Length: 302
Image 1 (tube, rainbow, N blue to C red):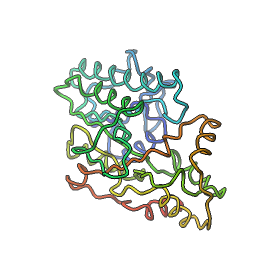
Image 2 (cartoon, rainbow, N blue to C red):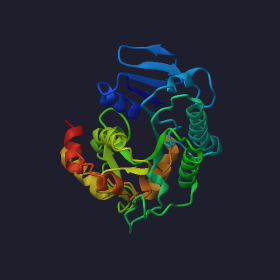
Image 3 (cartoon, rainbow, N blue to C red):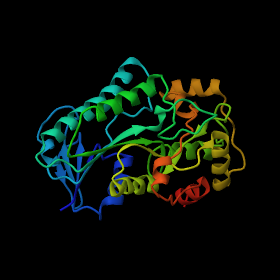
Image 4 (spheres, helix red, strand yellow):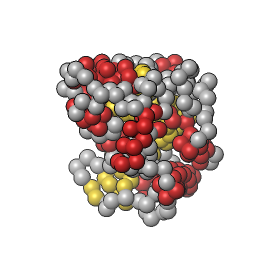
């Protein structure tokens, strides 16, 4: 009897994983802030991501635990939001550590979200798991604290992997929908000076890579990213080409700052150069179905 638990599995990435794994596990349980309920394919169990209330019993005899919990960083970095971004990640990781240690038969493998934003802004160097340089600002320090909270508690019976995930491009959620919309409105030019790198992965490869990590029992940190980071201006050019939209107005940094303030987000999300590669996945023999943006855009725009 195999059992998959996804903490915070009702969002975009959770649904990608449920679709991928629905025929690969006997039982799927989602820990959610919504009410508990059972459907034909999934059992939903209420939790608050910071205290025990019965949900912890679900971890007994689980095969895999995947934790996706964390407030979206698509917001203004004011003090209240910063606190919630931090607490949502650290508290959920700490309570899951406690729950795993309390189990007689804990999950065999626990994969915890992390982020490729842990690496410094880089135009000059590709960051892999071994030689990548970790930076020092709000986002990077959140990522460091998150991984520390995950790894500092020893779980002798449970393998642990931190998923340093990049932008996941998908049909029904995530960053691709607003980028596509801007391009349709003629605003699909470069953002800022356009030389900042985008690290990305197709939603299908995101799920396939997680399955691969589980099969190969890869532990420690893994970059969940496609092999070819691309400059922002090239990314937007390829998207316009696939959408058959001949022009896209560029958005200078000053306008991005004004726009970000109006819509309640931060320019870091588009201006930070994430130049990250999936060294461990490739070293272990993972092959990407969507290794280029052309393939990715063709598939997502179908």
